[in-house]
Image (cartoon, rainbow, N blue to C red; front, side, top):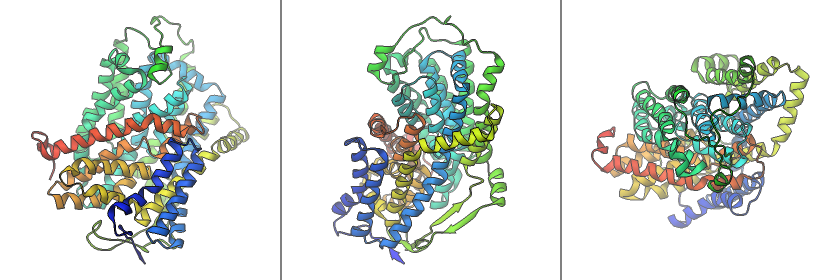
Length: 554
């Protein structure tokens, strides 16, 4: 048994600086020195190993074991999802089906702003709610590339859009996990997160469009953006406060898709925006106005249905695979809980993170049948047969897809290894404790702690496991509502989703923007930080300022 130490140097500031070294190396390598993502990830992992063993005193064998467990989690489920989504995309692209889908979307709207809103925000929210774990960014990034968006725009904008629904992703997994970790009623946390995130369900679509085409071009379509945001925000608030977290994002996204499509049947922008640059300068250079009588795509209804069928099959299967009934049935066929050797119950969390020393479990769940990536693979195989592929042809495409993703998969493996090593060594707790010492400003900085947790781990669920107990304990010590601050961990965390290295690699892979992960990081970083700070301000207002305090659950 090894007990975590949170101030190994006897100086909180110096210990915190050392704990931050892996993050500094990783982000610096990506964002400043433009080092390729898989090399930057390996450098970050090496730094984390040195810090964990050399400074925090973790036994070397435990550090290796934690890294290997993280690496396997990188392959399954994250890498498995990406591999199979890109496989499906490649099947549709090679048969020309994606070209038909691209043209058919112009039947809804030819305006690039509205296409972005519909795909990245509305469709993306559905895939987040149903599957999570990188699925929405992979799908929407591939679709935007197919529509002609630049790789940077497709990557960065997919990441920005994938924020509002993240707390309720994968059928509410982050919230249900947070409830288990903290012992707080799940409906209370779900309700609190819903209240915190309602305004951001309206802000994010506007933010997304402004990042793409600037204020002026966004305001020209403000009615459509408002419809998309309100039709998501209102169902999210109602469902999260009455039914719990499981179906919040799914119901809200379906409402948003339906409302926006119906609205666009009766409302049209005065000008059709044709830029796909994704930057204000590029948009200004490429923007064009064309009449709404522009030539139709010319495909038959049958052609359009066949083009959309793979993605409809994907939607149905991702939702089905995420449902508890299907998961339970598939797990009954095969699942294996592996108590990770050299790590399970051998690492002790210590006060003040927990009330008394607590042994950390390290169980890897091998559930190849029920994981979302398998549902996506089944969708790809069914779609491939419908499109006329022979089994040998599909196998060839799969091999080629795997080879094209080899560096991305290495990156994800290294990122998850780093995340698990920092978790079990207590390095991330040292960073978290620095935030908890901010006194009256804790509602703001506690929210940023959730943001940091997701940026480090790549998962709102993992960040809730990591810092949920700390948020509850800190809130009780400061006389704040534990429900408010545990919910703030998840709400703040959603804004960290766009800068975690795992999501950036998913985006670069889906958009075939290999080696440009640092460019994507620089594109989204300030958006992520600004939105996280706005969430922090909302939480602070709810903690101290009437009438917002009336929204707090105690």
